[in-house]
Amino acid sequence: MHPLPNIPASAPLPSRWSLRVIRERFEFLSDYTLSGVWRYLTRYGFKLRTGRLQMYSPDPDYEAKVATLHQCLGQTASQPDQTVTLFLDEMSYHRWPAPGKDWTEEAPSQIPKAPIRGTNPQWRIIGALNAWTGQVQYLDGSTIGVQKIIQMYDYLNHIYKDAQNIYVIQDCWPVHQNKKIFKTIASWPRIKPIFLPTYAPWLNPIEKLWRWLKQDVLKMHQFAVDFDILKQYVRDFLEQFNNGSSDLLKYTGLIGQGLFAQTLHP
Image 1 (cartoon, rainbow, N blue to C red):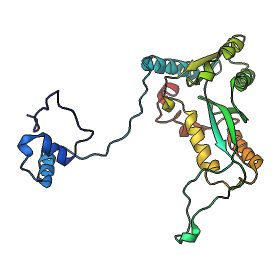
Image 2: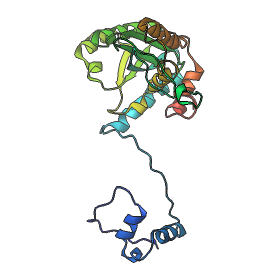
Image 3: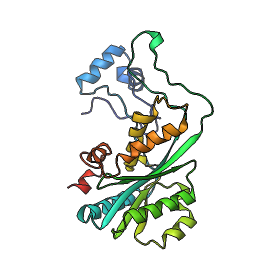
Image 4: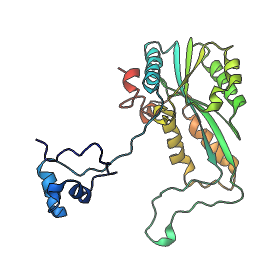
């Protein structure tokens, strides 16, 4: 028998079960001290655990869309010379560095500092991560809109000219679904845009590439005095993956224990 009786369905549930709330909700525990409630719970196998936030997509077609992703990746795994699967996304960064932690001496005068000056303009990147090779293609500019996305599709169509199918997996940003884009890529039938479930960034491994870029280049950088130098450092970082990278595939979870790893490498 469960040591705690069921709570009536009509009773509102608390946001979390603290010792005080448990004592108040269960009448037979009302005379217990809080330490007594603790001992009672542990005696019957209950344990205090730290909660974790759980990502959630409200998309009603979530499961079907995830199944489509696995189908695309499965085709790539079985025919890597004929089918290319790319994860596409955009990111922004600014001239001023993002704050971050750094090792330093303990004295207060040694707090890490990154100089800033002038205005803080934004620069944008659109990138595509090859799920099989770890190659990265990208374009950058002050804005990313319909024309830049069409330019990216054109670039990918040229880079992967020998592939029969090019699946481009991306989020549901409205610009990605612009009618002008669909009309243009209709003349490139090998390119097939695939859309992720809404509000599901964890399904796009290129997000981890952006995290790596931020950690290694953008946090606490020393180039706010010259935005062009910073842009070149960012380009150099991305271009190290021009020929593919197993390290990047591992980092993004496309090799190893990631969500799609077993589909690509069963």
